[in-house]
Amino acid sequence: MSDAQIAGGHKANLNNPNTSQESKEHSKQVLNEEFNGGDVSKATGSGDKNPNNVAGGLKATLKNPNVSEEAKESAKERLEQMDA
Image (cartoon, rainbow, N blue to C red):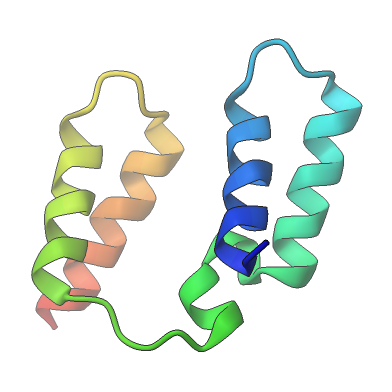
């Protein structure tokens, strides 16, 4: 199983309403300690991502009503950094 798949499983666990808080805390801990907070590209050294795709994903995050305000703020900050 690849690092991306493992990280993806932990990310899915965080968003699953049927998993316990204890399980979510474990997934959060694993992502922070082993996967750079869930950024698999940095954790695995898999190379650069297409900046246009990243920007598109961040813009979609800003418009998604199911995304938390915290995530939207993070996406907005990342977009501003990309423009700099």
